Amino acid sequence: MKKIIVMLALLLSFVPTTFASASMLIEANYGLNGAGKMYNPISASIKVTNNGDAFEGYFVAGYEESGQLKTAQVYPIKLEAGQSETLDFYLNSYPDQLYYNNGKPLFTMYEGELENNKIIKDIEIKNVKPRLYDAETIIVSTLNDETLLNILQKMRSESNVQLVPFALAELPEDSQALSMIDVLAVDEAKLATL
Image (cartoon, rainbow, N blue to C red; front, side, top):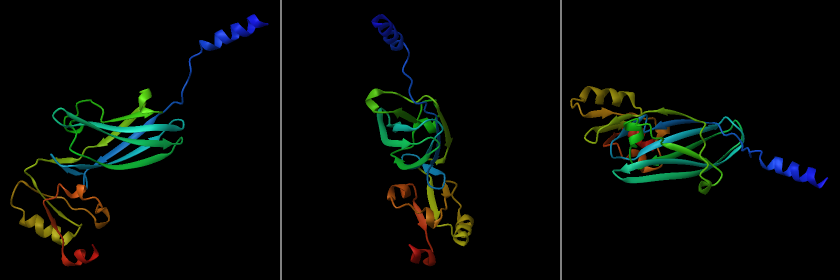
């Protein structure tokens, strides 16, 4: 009897341990109304959907901030099967991974603790690439005031001036989102609602 138990224990020790299969969909949107400016912080709205089993781990946005300086922003995340969560944060600069589309992943997900280095391989990423303006472009924005927008559009004579309107409801609480705007045109009626 002891031989059978030992053989059974030995046989079970060779069965590989299986973990919950994580399958993620990441939908990424960047910028203020889909626009960003070089050398300025850019907002990121990331929707993570779990298409596999229950998941607990970390979402990591890793990118080169400038030259050799690399940075990573780490967010704990816990999702049941079929559940989604949206992460809103800022990247300190426009990542090379978006600009050059160099194949380096911008996002990585780790199951469990980061120290275990268990990277989730089954990730589908849908990036909505923002319109990117160079640092010399003058960004003029309005709060979706069509009349004011039309007047500004007619007055625009410089080729390096871009109009980026956004709705009052989209007005971010964090001033980093507005750092790319050089001029914010607001009429008196909209100013009263701020």
